[in-house]
Length: 451
Image 1 (spheres, rainbow, N blue to C red):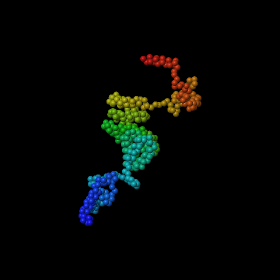
Image 2 (cartoon, helix red, strand yellow):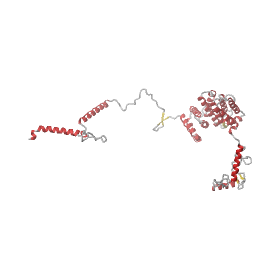
Image 3 (tube, rainbow, N blue to C red):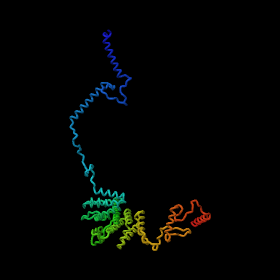
Image 4 (cartoon, helix red, strand yellow):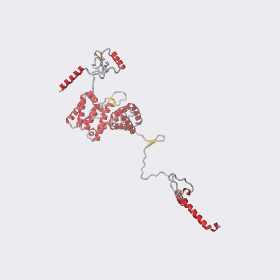
């Protein structure tokens, strides 16, 4: 009865209770609105279980659906293709190095003779002691490359440039030129390796008068050439053959000894005398303009090859070295050079007066005997017997007694002195009073004489 009459109030009260329950479930302070940020909620199909209102979820779904429809329409209407050619801007200039394939997967830049020579020069510069070990391999490799006249001329130019530009390579470069002059097999009508090398040297030789007066770079290049030519004269071994009535390679004045390759095997190996006159002319050019760099170069050349040059000139009955020393003395009197260069020239003149530092002994060591050499036993040790008698290698029984002393020293190395006598003196021994007094008297007398 009560329920039937009060149906409307009961429905209104139930609706209000439902609203209170919804509000309490959403805004109840005892329950968090969302999970902590450190532990994201697990995705479920129902958004209400995650604590989000329904109207938030519906807006998100609508926006996502719209974005998907837009992207689908763009993909369907797009004209782009994965098989389209590569795009290259019109202003881009395409460039591609020459490459070759050896059948493997990788591609490498094509090697050149210049790179090959550069590698050989770098190796010999850093490891000059490996020259004898590596020279056969270098020669075989270059022979496989040098197959035409153009490559032979390129090889000559490359080695000449490296020998005159790389520091401390002139000596090794001259040795390399000497070996290649005998071992490069190609010999065209224009000339073999040695002939082309001498022709290249002649080109610089003809510019000597202008080079000594040039700027610093020109002089430095000329000085490197002069020192390389000196090394080439000392190291280049050729077959000498006498010809007359032909124009020399460097000078056009007198008939002189020419150098030709004698394939028949006749002739004797020797130095290129054609370079002898060239070195004299180069020295004269340096002395004609006696500034410090030119004089320093001349001193280096004479220290390098002065003794060989003078010996060769003397064998030919020439006094060219005397003329060169005379010019140096005139430059010293003029005193236009700096003090350091002047000192270098004085040392050079002194070196030449001492026969270039060479010392000749009275007898060759292999031919020396106690009869013809007074210093025969000079390097042998001298011993003393128990009574103080000197005992040297000249004594007949020296070898037996010397061996006996060596055996005793092996058994008791700390007991004997350097001369083989027994040592009885301790480190703490003091002088006898009389000896000490005599020594003090000697010291006083020496001081008095000094005053």
